[in-house]
Image (cartoon, rainbow over all chains, first blue to last red; front, side, top):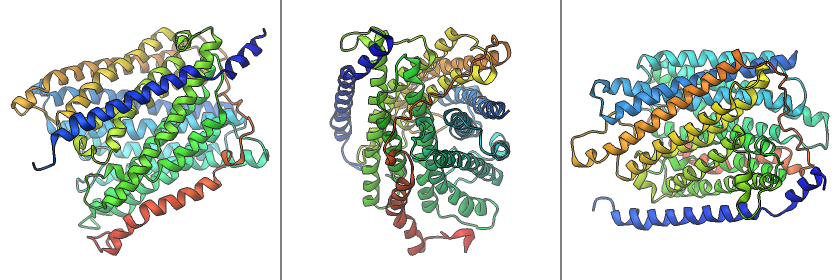
Length: 49
Length: 537
């Protein structure tokens, strides 16, 4: 297999790892946001209380 | 001859940029020491605010503007493979910017412009500071004109062909900067300068903050786009592969240009001069900018995955280990993207209208800002310097190993410094204060975090010094080579017309800007707030 052909076949493959990695990042961010909102922000209550 | 001119112009711009960077890191180190309150002999609010203002201006305005101009000239000449248009104009712009920096530096260093890099009124600086800042912006407009003329000339000479991706993105950035800088230019010319000159006694603070917000957020994209150019155009090649999708890359740049401009009010969530509805509208736009960020993350990581697989990486994540981590450009990209994830999360919290109240004006904000700017953006600027310096000087990089140490140091130092900053913000520590010790139980609990920040700042300073040393040694003692490389200019893949020009997008930006800033600015004149008009009339 030529280098060029090898290159092209690698490039045509779906970037599965990237999808999984980004899904993990998105899940982590969502979980962290929910923790901050429900676990830190809301328990502090309203201003002036 | 023009090649030599471009190299010299790029090098002159880069040395101002990285000189400012090195100097600013010393100021930063002083600030983290002074602010901790652990070294009483350093304590001086006057010196602190002069330092933090100088640090901010050097980093956010001087480093960025000169780097972007130098990188732009290089990118235009290399990717379009044509001489730089009007070099005298480019040198004139450089001169105007240098004079502006010199004018602003005098009051900054004398403590007469301790107004931070946002220079919000009613804190007033010496008039030379505003004049200098204005000249820096005006000088950068010369660069914008040259980039857009070269873009238009290339398209005129090659009808139907696709503009190379690096130049497409550079032209997008020039256009974005013209739109972006208009806000602060209006504020400076019509409000700050007449006020500082004593021609008007009062200033409409609400209008000034609104005009600055116009500039304040998209300026981040002005800084970020060159980093994205490196991620899209240099990193895939450096990793041994090629860009995953040219169309996705162009789409991301167009979306940044269009969506990044009309969203500045998330900096004004706690301000009274704008209504909640307008702020909500800008919040929606702010979240929309996550789309091009995600597109960039996907395209760059997919490019890395393809390169890693080509190098023998197997399985779901085996390609990560197969990447050439000892290539400074690849290492910088990985570290930069990591910091983009961390900083991006902080940005989502900042942009959340309700939750912003929890972190607004706390230490969380500079923590976030440093992760995105000093982390994601600057790391890629450093990598670009390592790539271009050999070409600009005709000498091999002095030490690749030291460059890798420097990049790791910058990443580790940034994480160590910004993590406590975020925690301190959640603990309620305000930002923009010169001392954090009030002898209370609360502030005593901040001390371990302050110590960690000092450790992080020390690593960052050492890393910055190493970077400047490496550039200096490369230029003066590097092995002589013919190191000319093309700036990844092979992306003429027949992109659709809407991704090969900006006429449509420019009109759309006009509509969005009128919709998002029209009434919010007009209201100051309709409501006849205090002295909103130009020069007091």
